[in-house]
Image (cartoon, rainbow, N blue to C red; front, top):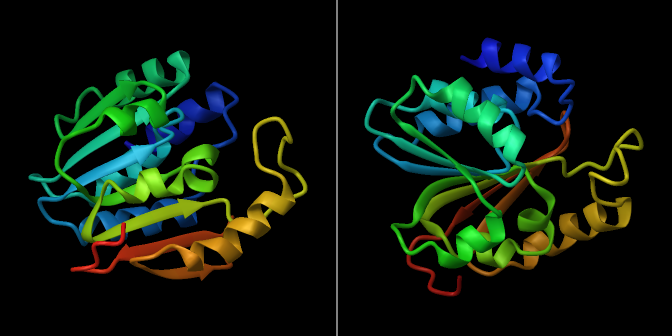
Length: 190
């Protein structure tokens, strides 16, 4: 499924998909959550979701949310054969604000606002021991300024993520830059 999603991204001229390094990490992290409930914010055309599904066991479930209708439709078509995933066309902020289901064991954020400006909302939906994962935390001069955050915003994220209460954080400076944070079990500050 990953190869099919990557091929479709190329056909659609979609260059914002997760890198292979990021995908392999997502697959590994998903495998660490047997029977887990996973969330992806910013589906794109389904590459990240395909990596997550590749690591998930048969009892795990994935909800993935995409704001752009065309990308959401492509992802629905790409992932339709896997009953473990639900692809939603929705604004991620509005969806999270209305969500009243169980907390998530892993949240992969691949959209700017829920990573940079609305992170507390995202973290509020994370289960104790759950993992918050995001990429693109090393600013690249090749980024389209209309689609990606400024260098100042990325640099600010890299400082302020350590001030978020109730999580342990690791920043990894490889590939596009990865942030992995885990909600501290028993901490009610989120």
